[in-house]
Image (cartoon, rainbow, N blue to C red; front, side):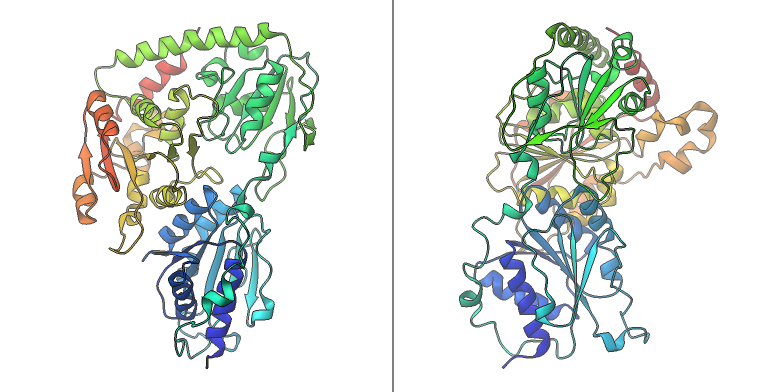
Length: 539
């Protein structure tokens, strides 16, 4: 004999399995006990895998990382502030169009607006960007298999909260109810779409932002157009992808651009933002995901999307060759500039990490400076090697990066190697992500932390100018002096500190297995000058 809360919790878990959820992250609590017991029984039957985390924010980003690489994941937590701590991950999922399932326990409706303990208004707590389904009965659970974007199930659970026994017939009830592939629901639609190239003629470039996918590369190759692809675009391969595109946009060659075709969500480069803001340039876009359909720049037209590839429309190859020649010239100057630096630079760290990613490898990149450094240093990857470079670019926050990287590594079990690149502030912001219990699944993941003792990205912005030097560190640079080795020791995470490019390359070539941290100290006091010298490079 069961009780109403147990029945409702088991119905929720049944719906999750039917939707293809195979990964469930649990943050412990009392009110969500019925859900936790039901998930445990489903895991014992081999239907899902459990990940337990003590911090809801880290738990949410772990589930987000799992979802980002194609696994179907749900996060389960208790009521009150626990729910609010999921908000950053839920917002990232909404802006990145990731089908994360959020299951929050709540008090029964009669206790709402009564100042009951750990009770707040959880219905709609994530705002208008996320649909909330307030569940008091099993027949209110919506179908979840075709959901695009995050879904919030708010489950009202009343006493008693413990089942009277195990879910004895869990296997009989759930086995075979999931889809043929647990990844069906989260595969991006764009993988099955082709873009009809616009007519040749205007001097055209292709901009591939985050999650643009291979369509951008295919179009650029079909039309003989330069490809400006961000590291996480999924299209930074092939001969049309230019390494130093952002350094060329403020030249006469950049001024000659007449048309831009945009894929994905471009966020990294101010030169690209200026290009998209030019009144003399025609802007065409392909469909993209996320909660907002409107682009942050003027759009003159939309590309036709078809289920079958259309005929190629190659343009004059002289335009592409002019960009390639300029790119090779600036790349040589950039490499010479970095090689002449007396100490290791963040750019060289990013380049070494990029080169260390093998075919079928995964690289998760932190926001702020590392992903921009990587943008100039991505190794030339071959088409078809299936390297996956990803980041949380929906809102481009630094929070949850360690946990997201762990989730991505856990959700991609057939990859060859997992790496992460992030700054020290980003690492510290989610150091709780390294707190794993002894029974938790642990991936092989090498986390490279570029440590300049603070936030170097602000040094390259307006607030890093000399006239603000008297307050810069206190407000933006934020030196912390944290001993990362001791921090890693507290969670029994292996840690290496390397001080040269040779040592870094050796550490990257010799992974110890499991989760490990490679710390690379670099200077911050010369970052503004270094960036200015790089931006001044010309063909």
